[in-house]
Length: 170
Image (cartoon, rainbow, N blue to C red; front, side, top):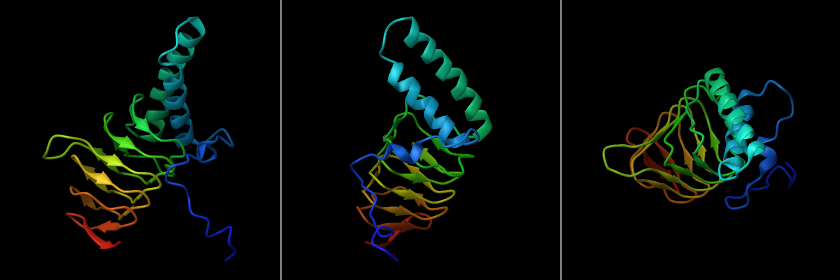
């Protein structure tokens, strides 16, 4: 392995190239593009901004159906998000997700037994079917295993697995 292959993805500097459209049929990237377009226009005034906002809403509805993902337009998601298989992803609009994260299919990020919402740091990898519920904080560079149910904080760089999730490495 060369040194380029071992490069660490930043937890603070977003990498928008991870979301860049490279061909037409990229449903997950199209969905993110709609969200980014809407957010860029939401506080602007004027006819052009209004038309772009409405167009983004219509496109978001279409790509949400195609992907089977429930990611609201007003979600607070850092740039550089990768969702290679977006089907079944549900994100609460009040949850916060840092830059350069990776979220696989069937992930739920939302409310749990206690009031409050998750705050996910930068460059967090979330495995298939994981649930992150309630007022938890996931640190930068953490990994959440497939089907884990996270209801407590996960420190930076740690790996959490199981139901309920427990830290297996830090």
